[in-house]
Image (cartoon, rainbow, N blue to C red):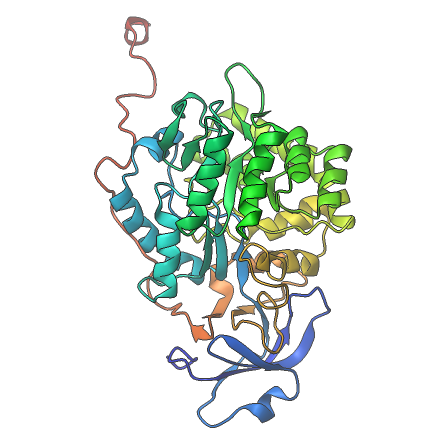
Length: 446
């Protein structure tokens, strides 16, 4: 490719540079990089370019680090229901789907992502396949199955009382918690995920289904093996307990209260709120047949979480951007950048602050040192975007793939000119519906 697809050094010249640190944009600035290393940013970049360097004219565009999605379910295959997710996803076709879908992330400007829990045991294998060049995709950090108690998770009674199904592994006692955590590290998990809350019959919202002692059994075992933990928490008590137990990254942190914020600040944990899934359902659910009750519930969850989440951010809690891509409401390659918009609209962050949450802070999700990735600085990883427009003025331009001029992953260009991947349905992939309502006699004979 003319823009460095062969792995030659590249000079991106004359663009406005947003370096990912929150600093003011730098107009008419050059960036020189080679495969997987930024060499220089600024006036010295052009003078350091040697023979064979490919020059890309970025005048009128913005150059910034590639985005990092801290909450993406690449193995789920965009189900429309838990029934599809748990009972229509055999391991073999799920891996084919993941390999088909993961290149879409690159073409949406995502150069790194965390898949904290996978169905079956696919995540680490996909990660390793990407790194080996078998599959095209962003940098990936992966968990294995999420740890649940017998009270279940968001799928209610679809979760068995013990054993494994889909992305879930149900723990029965403390000994199993410790053994399973060790096994997951052994089999390649970068993170250990815990479903701290779950949906129970006749209860509104999600309830905490783990004790503090059980959570500590996970975190202490994982940390002893140099592995961080991540927790699904959708009430204030669960966030407080997760922080007290030493969880490193909290997903959702819904319905925060002051005690939960204080616990997160004291623990030094990070939060990935993942408003995108909720906002997609609240704003656009009517267009895809979502139930009205769900629409109002999720809109309320954003409103009830935002104020104290901003308090946490102002107190120094790192926020990460996650889309929860992988469901029918968040298909791959379409909504990864929406979280930045919501950070601006709902939390009141500036566009530059939101960009830092999706770039520099994303290093935490990838288990990389801060400033080694997600920033444009000498020595950092060569993952960067060239976009038409000014995301420092309107962060929404990052969600418009039509504005992407160049994407570089590991210093190599991603082909943005090929057609978007399309596929047909797989046998038994979707739930087969006889009808959407009962065919009563009265319906036929009003």
